[in-house]
Image 1 (cartoon, rainbow, N blue to C red):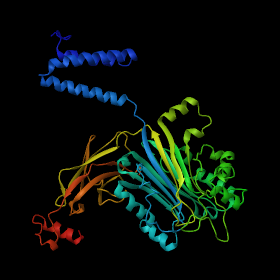
Image 2 (image 1 turned 90 degrees about the horizontal axis):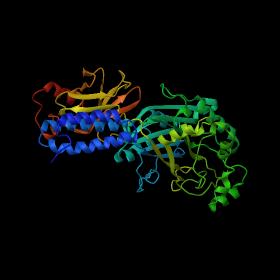
Image 3 (image 1 turned 135 degrees about the vertical axis):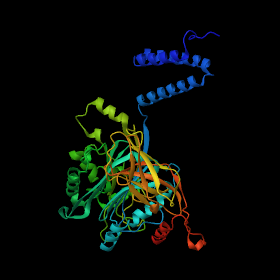
Image 4 (image 1 turned 180 degrees about the horizontal axis):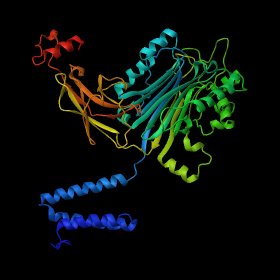
Amino acid sequence: MERHCEDRSDMDFFSEVRVRSDSQGSTGSCGKFVLRQRVAQLMTCMEDVSSDDDLQEELSRSIDQAFLICGKKMPPKMQDFRMHIITWNVGTASPPRELSSLLLLDSSSSNVDLYVIGLQEVNSKVVNFLSDLAFDDPWSLFLMDVLAPLGYVKLSSIRMQGLLLLAFVKHKHIPFIQDIRTNYIRTGLYGYWGNKGGVTIRMSVYGHMLCFMNCHLPAHMENTNQRLDDFERMLEAQQFDGESIGSILDHDVVFWFGDLNFRIADFGIHFIREVVNSNRYNLLWEKDQLNIAKKKERFLQGFLEGPLKFKPTYKFDLNSDVYDTSGKKRKPAWTDRILWRLKEDSENELDEAAASDFEQILKINLEKYTSHMSFGISDHKPVTGTFTLQMKPLILEPSVTLRAEGEWNADHDSLISYTVSKDFPSSTWDWIGLYKAGFRHTNDYVTYAWVKDDEISFSKDCSQVYINADEIPLDGGEFLLGYFCHNLQCLAGISDPFQIQPGRILSSKEGTEEKNDDSTKSDMFMGAGF
């Protein structure tokens, strides 16, 4: 059977295909048509080279290169990133036994990528607070106990007296969440006391800058202006370390939540309770102090909130869903709120084309905004907002790739190889941690090695560090490695899990022999309590 390329070698033909593709591939629809023709001709000619192994290998390499070029040129697809935000004034109470419904763990659609949990009035008596400074507080420990077995890692946290903010992320996202910073600002006692104020975590999620603010603002009906003044001061005063983004409103998305303490004005307690009991919440919206302020205050422009289609979350008798029966008889109010602000939504001077481009790479959808009436440990009910962040990822690969070399056990030093991406902001303070599979938070490492101090080889393509045999767990198990970047304050790379084999030193309880080839090291291990 005749072939179109019978007068030329197959390699000459393939070279021509590549040249013509390069020269005409950028000429629009005509170039695409020519490319399709050439690919069809290539498929025909490949039948003639089925017995030539060298030519097949060359063809395979060139086709791989073509796929690589296409992959670099194609824009990344939109990706859904699901977030669940919780705000709860816990009134100094300890965690309840069960939080599944609050965390969506009893739901078939509980595929959450990031939990952000803001608590107010965490027990901050002197003894409790000093203990929590040295160790994780009871709420953090409880939430890690619940979420770590489900594949979540505590990414960051910050505490200021009774204010606590926690972020838990699915393991697979860890290398793509970078530039993590925390901050706080006191507003109680004219800025000298932290019973009121805000705590903040900001982070880059696949290259998009997100900021989470957990606030506790002044109480009482008459203090509306004080609440607004305090929040405006937080927006102006809170700055983050680093060169990327300094102020809060410069982030791509800001989430503002907490016990904001805004009340329902004008209406009396009996009318409010009657409206609430008949589920006619919309009759109260126009008198909600925060809704009123959003229409008047310029610094609140752009902040959005879902409809308040749930009962006011304050004030309840403890362990009940009955509003305040004490002598004070506080009027019900939506004190606990979750709002968000997409940066471009609030820029009046933004032209339509730029706004359209931004919407194509970052969108926010509120799936559900509700309260949870079954929890009664305080006089507030928790409020949750479930969001889907639709985005085009700007970071497609981890900044650091690393792996464990060879077999690991406590009988000898072990090697780690790693590579970093171009322009990666490495530092002499970077380290690589050895973590047990299922680790709970960034500092939950077994041991670590400094990337510079423990370095044994370095090249443009790959570096190696070692971990001393003394540091490796004797009992072995499944572990992984994480590269902590000081400048980005994050784990910029995580290895695949690997096995550490048990060391040859076994406990005397099991009646085993001593390690023969290194008795000195054996004595050292046993003295260290391994």
